[in-house]
Length: 425
Image: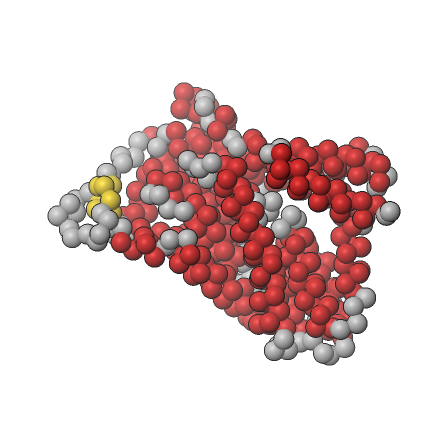
């Protein structure tokens, strides 16, 4: 049996054990990376550790550390209260505010994980405070980020359009942007209905100073104005520095967040002392272990093995559909843009035959490879999982996993039907 097939079977075993034995999947994945890498793939220790996602580790630790401090000193409470006042106490609008904000951030140049790192802690904190489905709020953040993620000036859009140009494929940056925005907006609308968003319309929060106002069926308690003190002002300044640093100066969001957190800890050690224990270490283990195993799969050629098997399919539309599914499945565990850098060249032979429209094919691949980023194994999904408050984390992980699986199962097919079958481009 080839190393590639062995690695796929071990991955199935990892999922089965994690599900039936309640073992942290990250720990299983680290063991699998070691055994498959050394015994089947011929990798040494350095080769296995080369796939450790150090950047994602720092993002998860840095962001959850910073917002744990922000919670301890009351900054997140102040931000939530400000958001409530911004929408006039209409709780149902908050998920859409989060969708728009993350979409705007990615559209103007933020990478999707950076936008989610900024917005997800606030969104999930709000969800916990006002009994909104954390899956709804987390998905709105992720789909908002992906909705704006392919604007012509965005990082994702620039990268994909550059790949298309280098491979001499006819493309349409505007179509790519609106294809992603439309699909993510549509799924956000469906989630809003399915996960109880319409029920939120009956919940009107009476803000301070408006106690005599009429409310809907379920008025919520008064939202008290939270005073700004020194720690909150400095924390807000640090959060602004995180946004400006990542968006304007292209600084790493994880390193920036952990630096801000350390400065706050030095200034106010009492309120920051418990923050380190609030870092979601089981989530960090889970994500880093799985991504290390996926890196081993790439190193020993499993990803290429699957991709090359698809290219042998003699029916271009079917091959296009399979590529969309490969994009969805693999992207749930790996870098979306990095994956598209491999998928788009694989599509070149089909596009050269003239039977598949290049504009639609690129749009379908982009949508298939990014909408699955709500998976708990992707950076965005991991940020949602790590920042969820007052939830059974194992249960919420399974909810994200099931939702991610549904997206993987459905979205590539829809993208293929909408963009490839009509033969766009």
